[in-house]
Each structure stands twice: as structure tokens, then as C-alpha cells.
Image (cartoon, rainbow, N blue to C red; front, top):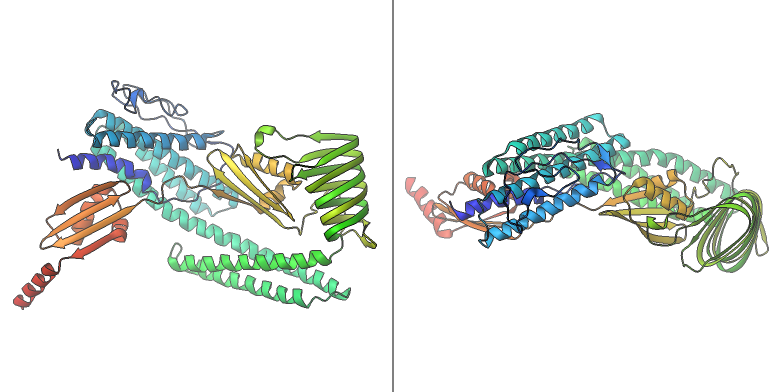
Length: 579
């Protein structure tokens, strides 16, 4: 048998996952799906250094058993903590095993036609399918939580069913040809998944833009009312009125582009272009909104931006937040105090009754917020870069420093000689003191860790958590910022690293000479050359597809055709002679 054809079988399996278009799937949750029972190899005499001996891998799903006896299957949609990460590791491990075997085949250390190669290939393909099913299950849950239309969710179920059918076929596969067919079918399914998920997520983005636009009307009304109040109090609001006009115009643009994106064919370049313009308009509107809020904060009651060492005194019931370099003396009754030390040099002295909450040190690196509940007494807090929030009754504050202050509730405060009222009315049922504050929360998922970046007013914080559980992440952010869960969910943006390879190197050259086609293929780290006794492009594409598992669309995308000039002239002369 031609060595290149044997090697093609190995490449078909190895290419399977690398050909899956990477799709940004759902957020990690607190438990991912249990794998199915793995395919069990017939071989029981694999050398020690050949991956697949007794297949003692993927113990989370049931080991591979000699004798081809399948383990009882467990639904991939049954959740156990950390299952997603384990299945990702299983996939990556079995992929590496397959690459190792391929390397041994190329070096002539093991036969490409051996049962060892078959077993390792089958394990890899099974792990790939399991990982795909888990990702789809994640996406389905995410869509359900976000209210994506039911037909999109049903489509995901159909894809999961198709992958499960391929897994059943894999259980009974007995030769390389069957594995190659399953690999191609799985690749085709994932190709369709990628296109559909792209459409679904585009619609989800447009739905999000729609929700933003719906809220923008009420935001604009609130802002205009506040600006009118400032104007009546003697503040020059000409600049901010122009900002409001710009904000409203951008929202209108976003709405128009959104409608155009919805009217275009979903998944098309036209729809994508309109969607991007709509998203860009909302982002620009957000930038303008941030400038508007800054103007209002600088002029509203209860807020002070202190550019140099300033004395601040306050008395009242409600919520007070001081951010920056401060030396603070305070007293309060039945209060909650949260102190975030961003520089690591803060001192906190408490004299009174309270309950302290200390977050688990194992949650991540960095200094967590110090939280004191039911505090009644006196406190002294000092730090060069801190955020201190106190919420309760009978609050008395005497502080000196540089930074910003926010007072919300019923009371008065002074900065040097000015006496001002606290903003708003205070309710112990509603402590959204940051309603118009600048809040940015980014969470980047990498493996089993979460990199968190927080910008809260004029303070910033970065830390790493040894978890991808969303509830744990939200809880820790709450401990470090005093934000409530609903506020964190509102502002949190999650970026999940892609799992499947999406940057494969593909080069296809076709040189036509006479009645033959010389084909050269470079796919990641593998190369192949062959000659076809045809110049029919459809036949050439079909043969390349058979040898690589690439789709016709992918081949057409990467194929470069070089037609020999003599062949062209000869063909033209023949045609002229016929005339």
C-alpha cells in the first residue's frame, strides 16, 4: 500500500479538530458535562512507549477497556464541577498522543497500518466528539439564559444528536476507512455548527443592541432632566447639551444599522457589516455617555473630586464612598464597611462591635477587600490608594486626602469651607450608590483560571482566581468592590479563550501542464505532492478533499492555480484548428 495513502488516514484523523472553525461559546459554569464511555481498543499488547496501551486515559469518563467492551455511558449533559476543563484536557492529551504516533509512523518506528494507530486515533476522535458536545451544551445553556429564540436552541440539540450518532458509529468502527468516514462527518457537522452558531450569536448581539437602545431612551430622559436642573441652578450646560444631542444621534444610528442587519441575510457579509456599524455606534454612544456622566458628577450634589489634600467632613444616614489617598476617621451605627487596599499599605483600626468577613485566601492572588458587617463604633482607615465604602446610619466622617467622594442619602458634607447636601434619598433596601459611577469588569477565562480586571470610579484592580465558576467569580468581585451581584452581572464582560485550533496553515498549489495537474499541499506541519491525470477543476478539488478532509469551500479559498502558458497556447491552437 502507498505510504502516502496510509499517512493520509492518520492525517484525516489529526486534521479533524484543527479544521473546526473556532466559535466563541458560552461562559464557563460551575459544572460541565460528564463524558460518555470511551471506545475500548481491541489491542492489549501495545508497547509501553506507544500512547494507548490499555488506554488508561480519560478516567473521568470510564477507562478504555481491552476487549472492546464499552463502559456504561453517562450523559454528557449531566453536570459535575470542572467537567469542561477535564474534557478539554482529555481532548488535548489524546491529540498529543495522536501526533506522537504520527511522528513515529513518519520515522518508520511503527506501521501506519497497525492496530496501535487505529486505537489511538479512535480515542482521539471520541475525545474530540465529547468535547464538542460539551461546548454545544454550554452554548445551549447560555442561549437559554439569554432568551435566544427556541428554534436556535432546538438546532443545537439537533447537532448534539448528530454528534452522538457519530459516537455510536465510532463504537462499532473496525477499520481505518470507517474512522476516516466518521472523522469527515464530524468535521462536516462542526463546520455547520460554526456557521449556525455564528448566525445565532449575531442575532444575540443584535438583541443586546436592541436592549441597549430601549434603555437609552430612559437614560436620555434622565440626563436631560438632570441637565435642566443644573441649568436652573445657574450652571452653564451648553457643552453637555451638545453631548446629549450627539448621544441621541448615535443611538438613532445604532437603531437604523441594527434594523438593516436584521433585514439582511443572517450570516452574510452585508449583515455582519451592518451589525458592526450598529455595535460601533453604541460604543461611541457609551463614550459620549461617559463624558456626560463625568460632567454631571462634577456638578451634582454628593460628589466631590479633590485634586489636592482637602479636608472632608460628613454627617448623615446613607452611603459614603471615598476613593484615593485618604486618612479617614469615622463612626457609624449598624453599618457595612468595605475597604479595598489597592496599594497594600492601608491600616485599619476598628473600635466597636462588628462581624468581619474574610474571603478564602485560596480564591486567588491579591489582597481581598476587608468587609465589616453590623458595625457600630469608631474606625480609623489610612491608605495611599484605597476605596472605602460605609453604608448605614449616624455616619460621621472626618477625612483628609486626594481623590473622589460620593455621599448618597440624607445628610451634609463640607469640603474646606463649602457646605453641601448629600445626593438622593437613602433606603436600606437599595444601596445602588454607584448608579452613575464608572464601572468596568473584564473576566478572561484561561484553562481553570480567571483573570479579572476591575475599574471602579478612579480605582483599578487586577487579580487571578483559581476557578471558572461564575458564582464564585461574582462573589469575589463583590467582596473586593462592595458591588452587588446584579451590578456585577450587568457590567461584567467575559472573554473565553478559544479551544480548537483556528489558525491552521493551509497552502494549496495546482500547476496545470498539458492534461495533468501537479498538486502541492501544505497543511500545518504536513506536506503532500501528487499528480492527477486530469485538468478538470471539480475532479482536482474532489481528490484534494479525499486526501485532506478539507471542504470544497476551503479548497477553493486557498487553492492557487498556475496554468502553463504552452498548455494554454496549445489549447487555443486546437480550438482554432477546430474552427
